[in-house]
Length: 162
Image (cartoon, rainbow, N blue to C red; front, side, top):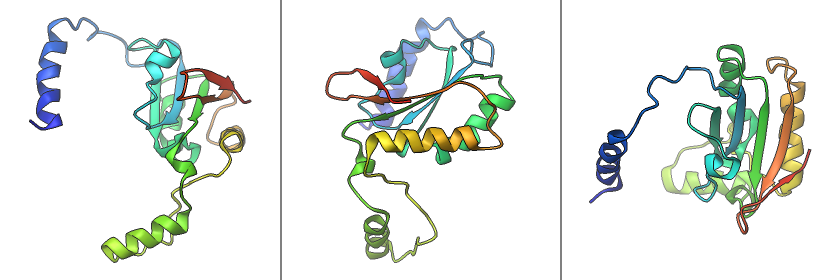
C-alpha cells in the first residue's frame, strides 16, 4: 500500500472525532513559526501548539528568504504579531554546498540551475542569526518580536539563540 493510500485511511479515522472545523482563520496566538521541513521536528509537539493557534511555515532549513511570502501573508492578512524561527542540529542544509547540488542536478537532468541558491549553511547558530537579521531588516516584515532557536534532534530541547 502506498503512503498516500494509508493517509486516506488515517484521515477517515481522524474525521470521526474531528470537532474543530469552526475555528477562526487567523491563528489565536497571533504567532508564525518558521522552521525546517525535517521529519524529526514536529513543531506542534515541540512547542505545545494546538490546532488553530499558530501558523507553521516549513521549508528546507527553515530559511527566512524562503518563508518570506508566507510570513508577509501571515502578518498583513491574518494578523500574526510574533515570529519564532527554529533551525535544528544535524540539518541536511549543513551537508552540502550550492555548487555540489547544482553539479548533481546538471549530471542527473542536464538542467542548469546556476541562478538559484539552495541556501545551505555551515554554521548552525549563525544561520539562525542571519535569518533573524534578514527578517528584522526586511521592509515588508512588521516590527514584531522575532525569536530564534536551535532545536536539538538528539534530545528534543530548544536553545534560544537570539
